[in-house]
Every structure is written in structure tokens, then in C-alpha cells.
Amino acid sequence: MTGENMANETSDIPMNGAVPYAIGQASVVRIPVPGSNRLAVEFKPRGFVPKSGSTSTLFIQDPTGKRHLRLDYGFNKATNTINYHWNQSGTNAQFGIGNHQPAGPGAAALYHGARYFRYAGRVLMVVGIVADTVSIVRASNPIRRASEVVAGWAAA
Image 1 (cartoon, rainbow, N blue to C red):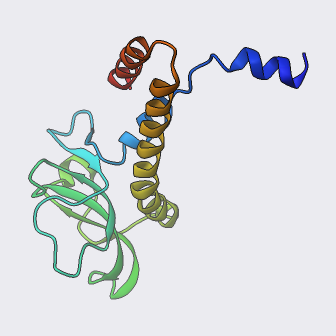
Image 2 (image 1 turned 135 degrees about the vertical axis):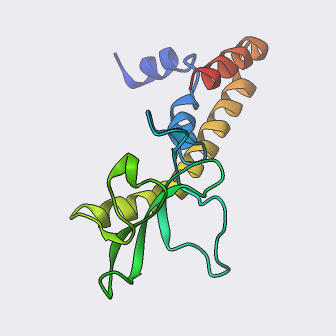
């Protein structure tokens, strides 16, 4: 099949932004932690945040932010060093991690991965929305394509 024939055959296939949208959605929604009594993974803090901002990037917290386990980088008052450590309040029973406990060897990757995913996930959401909007505008039957897109987002 030549490149021209292949382009003609694939021009009818609608672009689909549901995949990047679904991946990006994880950066802005609460991801429940099973068996943890309403704790969920998030990438933004809830509750009190100092004016200087949070030095944590990964938050496992309840809807109020009062019970939380968060991955932090900075001065650790338990070890008197600057390191990656866990800050927790009311979650020791679920995770067995004490307050200001140094994090393991993969903590740096987890910390930076969470930090970048928070922003990259939002970019993926925008890319997905734009791709689906373009596919609706370019579709021969926009109403049908719009219903497919809405169904795809709902499934995502």
C-alpha cells in the first residue's frame, strides 16, 4: 500500500483524545486507597498550607486534609538533615510510617515523578480535549461523533 492510499484510508478514522484525557485526569482527581477509611492519593494538599507553599508533592489524605501521609523534601527535624521523608498525621495505623520517617531509596524518583505528573497530567487533559474537539468539528456527522466522544470521556 502506498503512502497516498494509506492516507486516504486513515483519513476517516477519528482522532481520539480520551486516552490522554484519561491519563491526565489522574492528576486532578482523588484516587481512593482501598481499605484506608476515605484516604486518597492526590497531587495537591487539602487543609492548611503555609503561605510559602507546600514542600510535598505526593499526598495521601482524607477529604479535609487532617489525616494525611505526604512525601516531603526538606529539613527533617527528626534526623536534623535535609532529605526525602514522610510527614504523617493520623495514618500510622494504615501505613506503619512514623512522622518524619526518612523515605526509601526510590523516594527521589517518586517525589519528582509526582511533581512533574501534576503538571504533565493537566497538559494531557488539554491535549485530549483539543483532539476530541477537532475530531467533532471535522466529522461528517458531528452529532454522532460528539456522542462517541462523550461516551469515551465517561468511560475514561
